[in-house]
Each structure stands twice: as C-alpha cells, then as structure tokens.
Image 1 (spheres, rainbow, N blue to C red):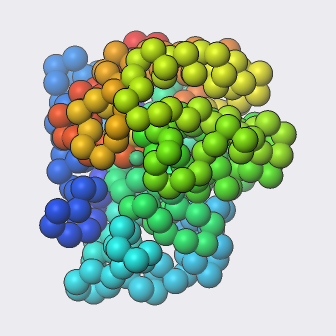
Image 2 (spheres, rainbow, N blue to C red):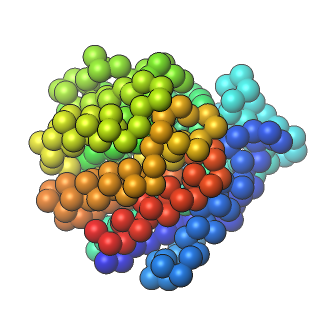
Length: 310
Ligand SMILES: [Zn+2]
C-alpha cells in the first residue's frame, strides 16, 4: 500500500493569535508523530497552492473574492466575530489546504497512491458557502468532493466526519444532492448546534450520529456500526473523503467525548473496507480539529497507521 502525505510549511503561518486553540503547534505535533520509524514508508509531498476557482466549487464567488480582499498585510482580521481570524499567512495556508485536498483526489484517481492524508491546517468543515465559521475559512473536504466530480467525472462522493463537532458547512453543501453523502458522529448538544438525526438531506444522503457528552468507545462504535457504516455501504461511494478530526479524543480540552486511539484505528479500517468495496480503495483523509497536542499526535498516528495497513 502507498500512502501519501500532503503538507506545507505555509500551514504553520496561519497564526490566529496567542491562546487560540487552533495553533501552529497542532500541525507540528502531527508531523512529528508521523516521523516515527513505523512511518518510514510514507511518501511526503508538498501541498500545491489551491486556486480561487477550486474554492468557488463550494463557496460563493463573492465570499472567495472577499476573503482574498481582506487578507491583512499585518495584524489580525476577524472574519466571523472572533473565532475565525486571518493573519498575514492565512490566505496561503487555506489555499494550501484546498490544494492538498484536490491534489490528494488527483493522486488516488490516477492510481499514484492507495490513499492520502492531508496534514494541513486550519480545519474546514464549518465553513459554509458564504461565510467563515469555527476556525474554518474554506471547506477543503467539500471542495475535494466537488473537484472529484468537476475534474474527474466521478459521480458519487462521500465525506465521513468523526470530528467532535458537526460539519455544518459540509452538510449544507451536500444537503440537496442525492449523489453526495455526508455522515458525521459528533458531540450533541455542542457547537455548532446542527447535526440532529432529523437532518437527513434530500434523499437520506445525510446521516448524523449525535453523541452525548461523556460517550466513548461503546456508543461511538454502536452508532457507526448500526447506522452510518450501513448507510455509507448502501450509498456505494466512488471516492471516500474523511474529515479526520481528533478532538473527540479523551484528552481533548474542547471536546467532551472519550474516544481512544483504538477507536480511530477501528473507524479508519471500517471506512477503508467500504472504500475497498465500492471506490477501488480511494480515500483522501483531511485533518480537521484536535486540540490536545498529545491526543492529536497519537490519534492521527493511529489513523495513518491504519491507512498504511488496510
Ligand atoms: Zn472539531
């Protein structure tokens, strides 16, 4: 198996301010974890710069142009009231996130790799068509899905999201298209407030698994096994994108779930099994949240190890 890692130092230059949880150290922790001897077989590539046109596959053109126009030369520029801010390095960082996700799709479709992990930041799944939200500027997971269609003619694309937060932006993008599937497990009630079971899309193409605070291995695996994985299997994606957040880890300071590294290993293997059946194994996983540096490092290592071994 060949697993590619797309990353770029520009993703360290998104600096949303001291004490902001979405800090550059997060990416350093992930990359350090993937330098352990076990990971010697990984192929590392520099994330290309994504384009405004790629961002506009998901986002309103006015919003994408506005983000470019307000990028600060110095200091910080708040985009959404405080959670999501741009520093001078943010525009390139978010375009590298977009570029990594789209290049990852290109690589698995071309057969250059079995699967791909995008070690990029900031996260993207809260970003909606016309607004930044929850640390996210562009929604690279949704963009990758539409890029797969636009560039490669794939029809049925799924995103599965195990971040502790619901990916409201991805759900919004996929809601009305029966050939796009979004499945999410997340803490509820919790930020951003969306993700109830009743939100099921235009054709049951949205599957939400809300988990109450304190839930751990048993509830997570039950919800995935009983609901999300069977629905994903029925959908039969031609490409699977994973919104891989590690803030459901028991060590995470923001999340209130109790997942372990074994849970991330388990769900990764389950998802890759579905992709193996319907998608020629094509999987592009994209880093979302995770705010315990230790939990982020060990969780992402478990995830990538499972991708290499599946
Ligand atoms: Zn999150």
